[in-house]
Length: 397
Image (cartoon, rainbow, N blue to C red; front, side, top):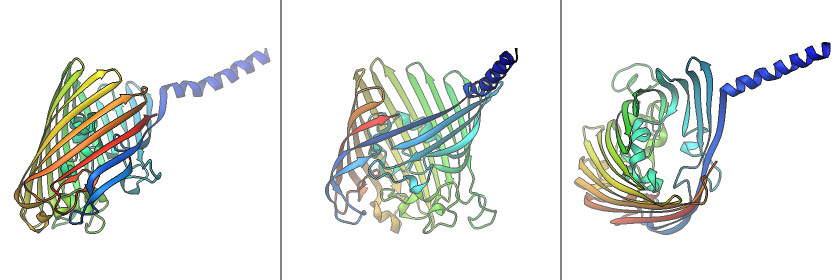
């Protein structure tokens, strides 16, 4: 009898943690994507001389990452959630996103089936969450195929620190979101304090059958304050990510305000899909200069077989204004323009592993004085076009 009681007690003790574990989960996941790249010309800076280059490249189809995704059931349809996602280089193992441990994402929050999801930490804005999935670079191309200078942050040149996000789905197929990213600075005047390097935004995502409609808005106040070398609030919403070599519009001067509006629509029919995306970015620089950059993108994707996918997209970038001293880094007048073509093809070896190849071609027009394929490097002085061709192997786990 005593033996039976002891056996039952041990069984209950072992069953208790198993029950808790069944209601909670932590998923380890990642992507590593490495290959060979060729470009006809690349330079160390906009004004330097460019030359052709063969190189290894990593994270160009999908950024290399290692992440943890967790959920705990709290009962009543409420769950605690978290995500920690680190970016790294598959070439040398170093951390990306400025050396941050979890530079891609780092947040914790609560998720309710009835009331939506609230998260806090370092997160994406809704241009990336809702609009970017309709863009060529994310569907079938490469990270280098994002819009020039990533002026609309659709590639996420910067993520939002100190951010609070709320997302709710009031109707089937409809998601609505709002976010606020704190400056984390004490109040003060003359551009200092509560609004110095803060951000706020909204988003809409509607998917019904073959139709997909998205929209987003983001406003940044004094985002250049986050630049470590020249800003006065590197701990605000935007960190030191605002100063990359191909961030040609951000590097043109201290940005006091940036407003990004985006609208997109997609339609799928059979094995094909067509998408249209328009983004409008307004930059106000210190000194009163302003710049407007509009991107118009159309792209199409076709699944030739279940394992072979290809697509092509065209982007027209139209700039207006800003003839200040910093504008000479990207234009000689007040109407710079660019044309860009993205193309890509993917062959699935399995559900987790694929071979892929992409091409990005960019050409300046109007008053534009430089070309700079996103994240790859500027073409260099005197160059009117730039092309990059990449081929690689990607594995998801």
